[in-house]
Length: 139
Image 1 (cartoon, rainbow, N blue to C red):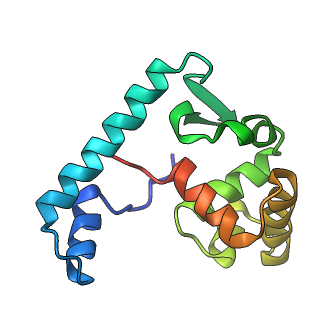
Image 2 (cartoon, helix red, strand yellow):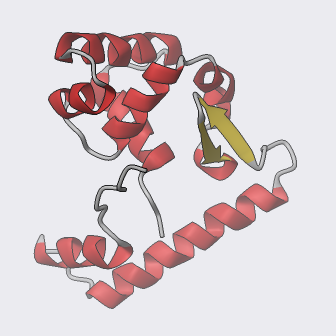
C-alpha cells in the first residue's frame, strides 16, 4: 500500500494566508474554509442533478467538486490520464508524476496534454487548477 503524501491542511492554508500579508487571523480563515466545505456538501445534497460521486479513471470524486460541464468529459479520461491528473492536483511535477506512474517524463506530459484536450481547457494551468479542485483534500 502506498503512503499518502502530505497535503496542507486548513490550518496550514490559514497560516500561509496570514504570513502572506492577509489581515485576517488564521482562525478566521480556518472558519471560512470549514464553512465553504460545509456549503459545498450541503449544495450537493440540495441539487438532485448532482451525482453523489463521479468516477474519474479509477478514482471517486465528490460530486460537489466537479463542474457540471465536465462530468462527462472527466469520465472519458483513461486510467493513466486520470492518475496523472490526480498527481497534478497534489502539486506534483511532471518528473514526479512520471516516476510515480513508472513512465517517462515525456509520456507523462503527453497524458496531461491529452487530458487538457479532452476536457477542452485553455492549457496546463487550467488543468492543474481543475485537478486541485477535484483531488486536493479539503479536510
